[in-house]
Length: 512
Image (cartoon, rainbow, N blue to C red; front, top):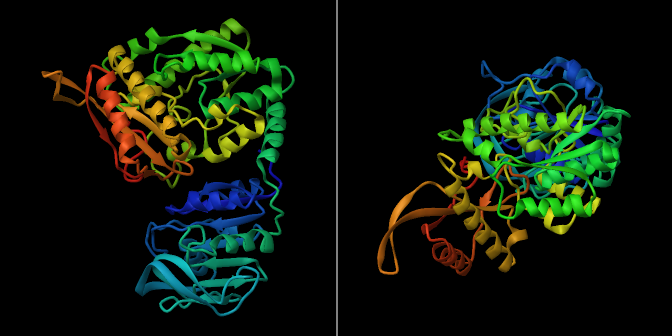
């Protein structure tokens, strides 16, 4: 993706790295994240107008501490180091970093000693979020100390001549109220960006990029599920290529209740896309027999999904590209140099090495809320714009253990009840993602004065901005009561209902 104004965030393993990216984008500047192991050549090829070094949990003096290529400082662009990133910059450029006698974690009062472009407009004394065990005791030659705290003599530093800056605190978190303004000072006052990255700009740039990559004659298929990600990806490609796009809707039997009918009505009927609907329910369920491991489920589904595509592509004709709705959190969670694999995503980790298509992933640098903005800009209906995320493997990862037709039917009914009640209560748009889970727990109950041995249904509902972190949703008790009553009364096989109160981390949003 060719972007005129771009920041590259060099990730040193910080827990807030993705949050830095979000804050930069909220300021309408495009950014990408690269691992600290990237070469100077790769970083230069990204053509950044500025660099941000993220925080990290290591000490700069640890033997295996993350380091950066010295060439990063020679690109001739402004650099902002945050927390570990500042300490690394200080050490690399001749300053001194030591273990702090009084470590700082949490809200801290900072005092501005000298104002400049970075701290322009910031109060002389302000609150910031600290999280560090080391600190800079002496700034490198050429740097001025901008701010201090009671326990940190160099809380912010600047070398205006070389455009190198460091912050010991975290400007990206909400606990630093003036942090966004400080980031804006770096982007607009130091890097001289204009802040021109909007969703309208993204759409225009992406459509042009798709046309350039695909060329004038090649044809494309898209795996259209009806979820927000694949819907936006398909619409972007359709606007770029028109009838050269064929959408293949694979009913693998793992969809929500009524989803097949809704997808076909919307995209075939309303948007006039070329759609091939494939009934592959029996094939997928046969391959999932006896499979209980979550990662194996994803790989079984991912591999067969591509095989079905290949079969359908042969019927359509020569197909050169496959469109996927991969998002940036999918890429990050599936493993980078600084992020271990939490779980492979259907859009990232489950694809066979010998697939016959080249990939087009027009959303792979976007967060979920940005995708929703693109969807609204494209004119997609509200029920798609605000649809909750749905995993590529579908209900297979919400049926814990082996997937069977009976369990799927039960879960579809349970999930439909949950979503209906959330909409009835006016809560659907307040919640990032909500769904029913069938954990495979059987328990004794009583229905109609008779002993029953039935299924437990779990509810997972979270609030989030991008899926990287999440909080459980604090339901009014009466809503939980209605959901519980309907589940145990409307579904004969269910006799127990539980609500998952786990944040992410430590839990993931999906149970598998």
